[in-house]
Amino acid sequence: MDEKTRTNLRRQFATHLERCGKRHTPERFFILDTALEIRGRFTADDLLRRAADGTMQVSRATVFNTLPLLLDSGVLRRSSNHRKVDYEVVSTPAKAEPRQNLVCTICGSIHRRKASSLRDWVSSQSYGDFAPGESIEIFVYGECGRCRRTRRRLSQEKNRKIT
Ligand SMILES: [Zn+2]
Image 1 (cartoon, rainbow, N blue to C red):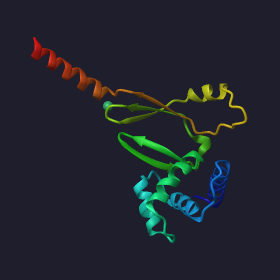
Image 2: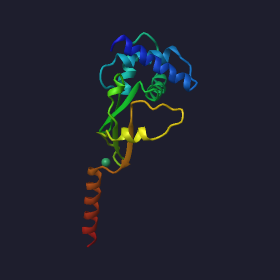
Image 3: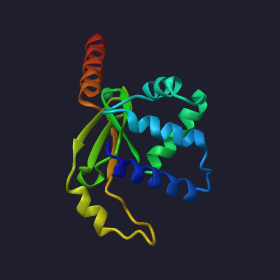
């Protein structure tokens, strides 16, 4: 990551902390810098391990409390695929493709798909003095194909036993 992107992301995070009335603690920025060092996707535990190897002592709680701040600030995004939740740095927000996340409420699996038409919908809405960024995600909750098939099979077996 180049220095300019890093500076922008640090500024973005600082602005977000101010907006929600949180302090610019060295620990929070250390965790941000640790996340920015990681290439590609990483889990909360990966971040924790990296932070533990770093120059500053941060507790597990601090790492886990800082993650949502990094997400809300738009520096990180969640990227989920099948039961595993991980994170990635949003270094190219302009190219971010709107996504739909299909969340199964039974097994917890998440299928992510592109949904470019969401951008039109988002820009057709009004937000008062809020300025929407590039990142757009919707979460649709329901039942995945596998769970539906399992449920049907179980109910057929049950019916067969009854008759
Ligand atoms: Zn399922």
